[in-house]
Length: 280
Image 1: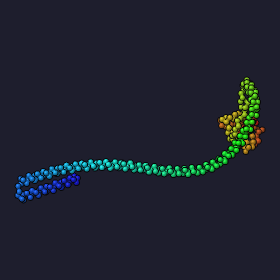
Image 2: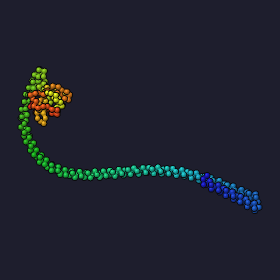
Image 3: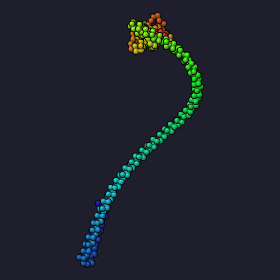
Image 4: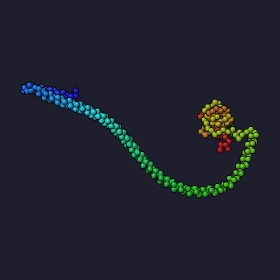
């Protein structure tokens, strides 16, 4: 029972006491009981009707109050949701502000660095201006040189014509030589197969007159190639390749070309044994 119901109950009790008091007063005054009873009945009915109307009004007010409570709760829930949304917005804006401050600091540092680079570039511009002046002078000199070269070009055209004639003669001679080689079962590489490519390696093993070094078939080394051994640019001996592997080879020392003992770690080269024209 709520407070309003308690108030109504108290009112009913007070009214009942008043009715009893009125009844005692009627009995004491010896008045007409019927009239008084009818009057009291009318008053009681009137008051009962008023009480019912009041109770109905209170019930309506309670319904209205209950609806207002529900509406207030809904409003409070909406306000709580809005507050949470605003709180999240505030936290997001605060994070954005911190990020913006950090970016501003980075931009400030970048700007300072850019200013320093601009100063350096200004100095470079001054230096480049000086260089440009020098280049202009060089261009003038080069223009003079171009004129001289053009003169030389005209002079060399006659030489080119003579060389073209020589080339035609050599081409004819080469064609004849090719026919001769083909008739003998040879090709243009037959005369140079015994010449090793220019290579440099290291001695990895020495056994008597046999020397193993760090060059092999993958490098172009073949049986019959000649290699020279040296240390500190001092010639120590020559050897002939007798066996090859993918990344190493074995050579036999040439006694008459051996100047000193070969050791592991000595350098090996094929350049010194190549014909002079080939090495050039």
